[in-house]
Image (cartoon, rainbow, N blue to C red; front, side):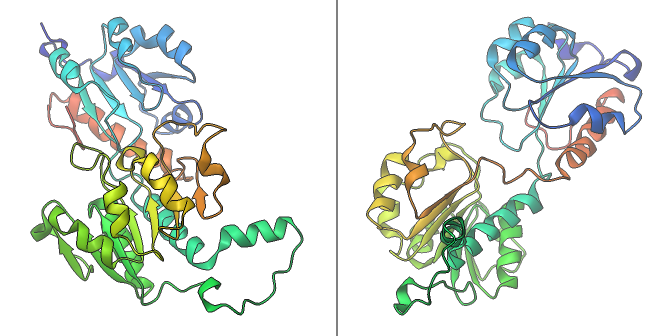
Length: 328
């Protein structure tokens, strides 16, 4: 019998386990005064040891599928992140375990990171920091093509006009950029973007854009989206900004394109394997900005997550089955 066939525990009987190596989830939950029992673990070994005690697990990167074998009480997983490709959806459905994601908690943070990346690439901030470390007052540049640039008047192409992508569009318009985008259901969009098409408009978006910003989810349609063919459509002066998933990019195609300046550069916040290995070629490329998957990490992250957690906890204890940002 699926565990969901039994009533969800009352708050007085509930135990929440927070699993994250860095985020202060327990402390932020303490401040909400719910009276619900809870604790935090910080590494895989601790999680394996305590999973059997949990009715609710708040987790992301520490998850592994084997945990289900030792989780007889588990009723609900609240993902710390927006993505959910790491979770075994079919197994969760079979066990009757709910899964919800932290949709929306990172909207402002990730959108601002995308803008920061575009500004940094345009203004050569990564190069200027290198000059600073060398105590080098860089001289004025005669060659116009090698100078810093402006965002105003440029075209940004946003792949995935969801909650984050739509905010990138709003911020880009504030910089007087032309905004074009792809969206699964373009007719549902009501915002400032100048042109919105379905996925069939991707090729034209790549040809026209000075900045290509990935804000799409990783799924069968977007896996390997940036590859040799699609990179070949981009302008040699264009930049790629990936604040989506590393799986949306084929590294074996992007790396040679960056080395040969087939595109001008990239800012990358997510990779196929994390942490990025010390031997990764990305570290050595001057025209690449590498950030450690920190686009969503701001001082407000935990508080925003707690809002979703407490709302969904209330729904389940009231016997409701529909959760905020539910996946399973």
